[in-house]
Each structure stands twice: as structure tokens, then as C-alpha cells.
Length: 91
Image (spheres, rainbow, N blue to C red):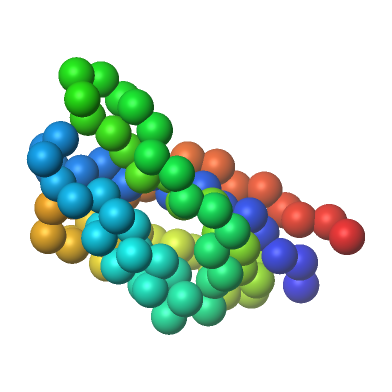
């Protein structure tokens, strides 16, 4: 099986949320999900609101990330979590 590169977009509940804490908790969920975090960055959305974009790598045999997305979306201070990109890694 090949590895896949997945991008998650995490939207906080408000601009006042502590994004570093949310990002750390999400990274721990990803590790528990057998994924390896490649990068994480905060992206301006609008009116002071920022999203957290996390890129991670996992084996495609694990399957759907739906359970992971739900875990992250259920964190305090998180409004939503969605996969915005999936790519198969070669090499």
C-alpha cells in the first residue's frame, strides 16, 4: 500500500481561541490515528479569524479519516474540521 498526504482544515469557534493548543491536541489525535504530521500553519480567513491547516502522512490502508475529523471537531474551541486535500505519495 502507498502513503497518502492529507490536508486538514480546522476552523476555530472564534478568533479568540488559542490556536497553538488546538493544533497540539489535533497533532496528538493524528499520531494516535497512525499518522505523521508533516506541517502545521495558521492561515488568515477573514476579520481576524484564522484556520489551522495540518498536513500529515498516513498509510492508505487505514482508510477513511472520518473518525479523526470527528475527534478534532469535538475539541473545545473547534467549530469544524474537514479534509481539503488528499494525494497519493510516490517514491
